[in-house]
Length: 136
Image (cartoon, rainbow, N blue to C red; front, side):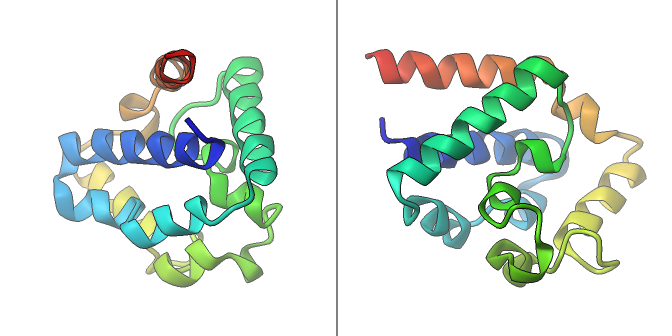
């Protein structure tokens, strides 16, 4: 499996967890086919660097929920939201009417926290599954 594909699988699985809790509409707020196309368009070297950084973030810092540490798009732009294509499609995460804020509001309405649906164990298990697919 190519590194670009690993990133897409990673994001699709995160989206799947959102869909379980809030439905398809809210999953689409997080990750779309256009987002997948952006990741698939990365060079393999860039995708590998991003994937390795996400793995380190999950392993070393026990990252959970939604954070820049588990967002390939944040790595693409080195956390510079002003040049983020994902931010253009979904609005910058921290703007009040962004897709991220809509997700946050929906989860708060349901009394669910991001770290409950995307705990560190989820990320570690997901990375382990992706690595198994690489070894096949």
